[in-house]
Length: 357
Ligand code: ADP
Image 1: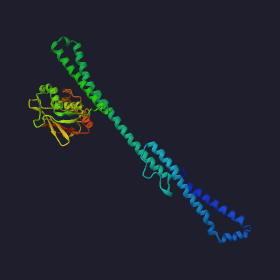
Image 2: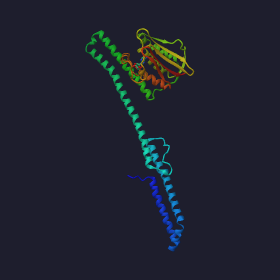
Image 3: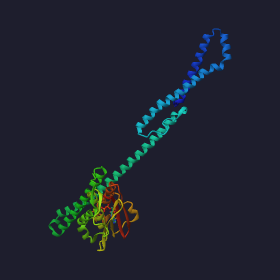
Image 4: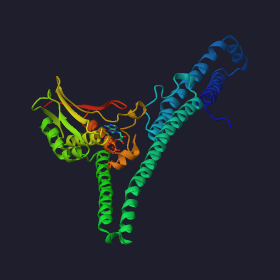
């Protein structure tokens, strides 16, 4: 199909105007010079002069038509495309000047629009994949402890309840699995709050050493059970103030210290050391353990949700697989980052900074 391009329309209109002007000229000359012989002589002598006005009029019409298309129609078209795909105005919104090419312009715009839509579609597909795998993981994480609880309850109902030794053991196991589900739901709550912007950071000035001591106190029994020592490094200041959400930083330190115990040495030589240092504008905090360590490949992935290096050890310890993902979210919400250094068999060090108060 031939498209009526602006250039073609302008050529036809200019041609029509040129011919019309020539015809008008001939008619006027015919009226002024009654005698046909006079008219013929005049036309022969002045044909070049007679050609000028129609040609000039034709050229002016041609230019005006192109300008009209460029200014009006292509401008409107650009606006429609911009409205359609909310693109920034292209550098050359309409082909310039007298070489206006509507087809090329449309092809270019459709190409840009298509690639924008493709990248939007790609992002939506990524989000959909992520959502699907997240729900899959979550269902799996909830199913495992729930099935254990059901198993122990059914065993109790089947008669184990009358055997005091077994009934106590089964109830303890059911309670442990219920605790695991509770931890998972708590962690999930933090992650969803963070993602929907409901984390509501309350930035205050707080003593980092107080927070470390508080976490040591609450994890003391867990550490003692695993035979892991909790140590506040001697060179740390007695008190140092940082600016942040004290509650959420307590949560971060708690997750790191619980991990250092869970994945620490359980043979009596295990230890977790917290170091706090004052820097020019920041407070540096690190949690070091001498436990199992993390291999290089896993180091890049441990901050992902539900990623576990040692699945059975994590589950046995009641881990949700979300602890480090939460730490990352919470520290990033403070505009800082959390990092890890680790060596398999030698231990791991997690560290981050907070603005100094
Ligand atoms: P989990 O609930 O499984 O502990 P996390 O998100 O806290 O989940 O940790 C993710 C994984 O990273 C753990 O399953 C474990 O394999 C590894 N990990 C975390 N902290 C340590 C550590 N201090 N030493 C060794 N491995 C660790």
